[in-house]
Each structure stands twice: as C-alpha cells, then as structure tokens.
Amino acid sequence: MARTNRLTDAAQQARLRRFRFPVLAVAFFVVMVANAGINRLVSPVALLALPVGIGAAVAIVAGYRRLSRIVEQRTDVTEVGKRGMWPGLLRGALIGSGLFAVLILVIAMFGGWQDVSWGSVGGFIATAGTTASVAVIEEVLFRGIVFRIMEEHLGTVITLVACSVLFGLVHLVNVNATLWGAISIGLTGGAMTGSAYVATRSLWMPIGMHFAWNFMHAGVFGVALSGSAEPPHGLLHTTLSGPSALTGGTFGPEASLLTMLVCVIPTVLLLRCAVRDGQILPRRRRAEA
Image 1: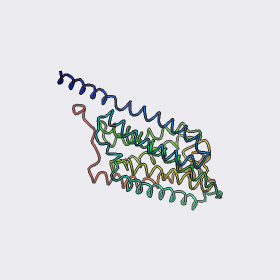
Image 2: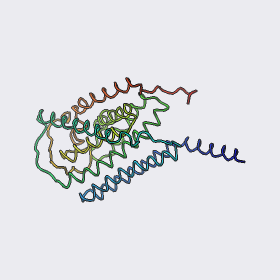
Image 3: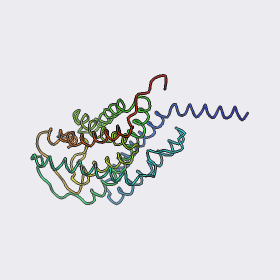
Image 4: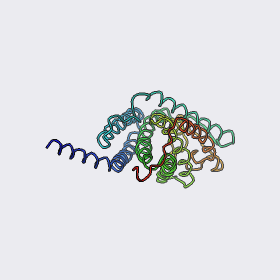
C-alpha cells in the first residue's frame, strides 16, 4: 500500500511538472496585470506608491519561490536565491543607469533635447516604487519562467531570439507603441537582460538593469517610456525633438537607433562571459526530452 501511494504521488508530481509552464506563466501574467492596475491606483500618491511598489516586488519574488517549489518540485530556486542578491542588483543597477545616462546624453549631443525643466520630487519617489515592481514581475515572467523553461528544450540561442521577440511584441499593447519601437525594445531590453540571465544564471542582475533603466528613463529624466499613454512625472521633465531615429518619437528613446548601439556592447560582453563559463546550453534532442 505504501509503495502504491509513493507511485501515485510520483505520478501526480510528474503530471504537475508537465504543466509547469502554463501554470507558472498564466499565474504570473495575471500578477503582472494586477500589478499594473495597482500601480495606476497608487502612483498619484508618492508616499504610498513607494512602499506599495517595494512590497509588491518582495511579494512577487516570494510568490515565485513558493510556486516554483510546489509546481516544479524544486527544493532550491537558485535564480532568486538570497546569496548574491545585493551584489547582483547593484551591478545590474549600475549598468542600467549608466547605459541610459550615456544614451540620453548622446541624444543631447546630437541636438535631440528641446527643453529640460524641473519636474516633480513626488513623481521621482513614486516612480521608484512602480518601476521596482514592474522590473521584478517582468523579469520573473519573461526570464525566470518563459526563458528558463524554454531554454531546457530549445537551447540558449533559439530561446534568446524567441524571448527577445516576445518581449518586444508585448509592448505593442501600449498606446503610443510602434512596430519599430517593439522591435527595438526586443533587440535591446529583451536581449540584454536575457544575456545577463544567461551569464549569471540569476535574476538579480537583470532585475537591477531593468529597474535602473526604467527609473532613469521615467523617474530621473521624465521622458516617454515604451510608448506609455501618460508622460512620466520624474525629477526632470525632458522634451525631446528631432527625427525618430534619434529621439525614438512617441515611443520614447528606446526606439532610437542610438539605443541599439548603446545596448549591443554590454549584450555582447555578457554573452562572451556566458560562452567562457559554459553557460550556453545546446538544443535538446527529441530522444533526450
């Protein structure tokens, strides 16, 4: 009887693991939609948006750990392990903020700044909270779930391409989205953070990069972010003017050709590190699957 129970439990675990991708993906897609709604409600109140955003980010990571253990039967969810969390977040934040600072200053050098004025300290604080939760949920969903599970079957190269395309396509739902903007954000944000995950096998650096890039975008310089409907209220209010190839047009600087030039360097360096450390996985053959 005990052996029968063990076999039944093993069969149930195998069945649950077989459906791990849709279960995890659907669950965290719902969380992403809910988080967007919460951010919309609390963003007008800076002193509320900051703790709510940080609290949501912590809850998302904790929920991912818990659900991964239940659905995938993993004892240790290493990609969001506590070891290396702060160094990974810090390195990612330094890279993300440095890259965007370079991008926006190069746009200015080519005459893309029309006007710069002081914005809102409250908006600066609120944006820190909202971008924290957005960075965490998107990296957990696109890198922690979609990328990680696809890579087990398709290998690193195919998965990196597919997930970069998917990451760009989901931004087409934004009000001021453009096809080129979606392509650009896939080639830059999707490929760069995906490469950071491959190089480190951790979500902390991608989360840090994603947060810092978005926060510099909206919270510091106050420029349009990924074709969003409403202009961000950052510490500064920066108005860009000029050809879309330079400024990104209504989509924002992420659709600028300069963004691709700025982001391709760290992406290549991260992939070189991944190759050096043997982190590029081959495509699994059908017999091995």
